[in-house]
View (cartoon, rainbow over the protein chains, first blue to last red):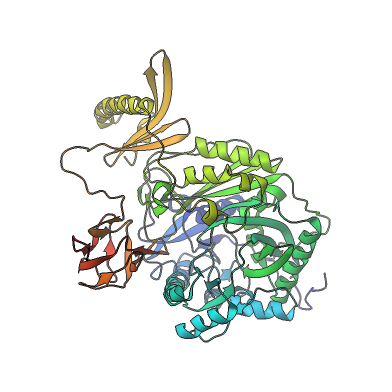
Length: 507
Length: 125
């Protein structure tokens, strides 16, 4: 409560139209929050993204450029012009793309648009990992040893790896989501990996700047959801654990973490709030930590909504996207009478379009039949439906499956059942892989570290055996489908009001 | 779509759909994919990223870096090509000690799944 600013609180405002500078499931999530608040939406999309759920759901759509992200989703000018032309008062950047780009936040402000997120200054102070670390150092927060200098010459960086001591991890300064991040185990491969990280960083975030950090080999990833209200007061909305990562990309997240004591939770929560307050944080953000041997280290601050925000929403009963919009309208203020206590346990699985039997190579193409088994305590966040195309231009995440139950073990059981009952045809998904991970004793015990996947799931999954039962089902299914196909062609030509005919759209 | 299939005395339920010459079938907990145009001319085995005599693209994407040139000898697990797809980089490495015969792609190329990228000399060394 110490940080109520002397300046008077700006007046409340109400948006009537919000532009969305994003795509996929997060665009759908934002549209849903806007719909609930009676706000119109404008989807700013690339020319290949017209076959998507967000495109169909948005009040208005505006094509702002070609498929490559530099022309569309990372193009600041195109997004601003699109938002202005559509008559929106604010822009929600979602996550990824321009969401952590201070220049974009600034450009929005200059153009008279409200950027739904923290100020450009906060993004610069906390979002840039190097600045964030020096800020944290001043605040006396525990940091991982590493190199955060401005000198980006590759040979110099290789030398720094030697000084820090291998293994070392190289990361994009402006990044997140595992892109531009590589683990260096030997000096021979250091140069190649650093260059690769710089290219990925430049392509994904528009800046090739990287930094180095000592790699903690037995660490758990625990993060705190923070939220700064419109008066500047920051609270935390408890923690999530995201230790299940592959190539530094999270796969399974849960709230709250099964790995930290109440005492540690209190300390980490206070540290998270401290760093957010130093950065004058407003809106939703996340402070990430690594936890090893009973100690925690600040990893980074993500100045945006997280992919895994639904697990926090499930255990606390909050709506973070709505709270973001309310904050941008200067309406959201933490109420001291509201005491938040996490209830039960929530797990999220990211469904990626990839082939688990081929080591996870991306799988692209047109989606066939898709079925998500709805039920109590289940939530499905997805951006694509039957007939939509999964392209190679963007992130492979096609959906998120979220469950809630009274205990962690029940939530795990429920998640396995839900995944087994889900149907995705047309592209391969990591669903069989997710089921294997959720069934692993280390995951069930909650003792997994960030190296869990590389230790236990380095090899591609073995292909499921095709039994004689399956072969006979296949033959008969084929017969039935071909028979129906021929009758269907006749009946749809007559444009009958067959309730099932809509089923065949996109085939 | 959901189908009922008579198997002996019992009706079994499957989800099935034909898409792009493949039958997608889900029965109980598992999903299977069958190629329908088997026989005839042998289709390129798209799944395999590598064969002894060539490297094909294991996924659609963009070539961002090529480390080798024609007539260069390469060692097992040496990096050959870097591809980018879905914003992630993938490094294609050699499976064995061999020699490059010709490059079938260049930096910046958008390649499709199964496209030939590098040809090796048939005999090693």
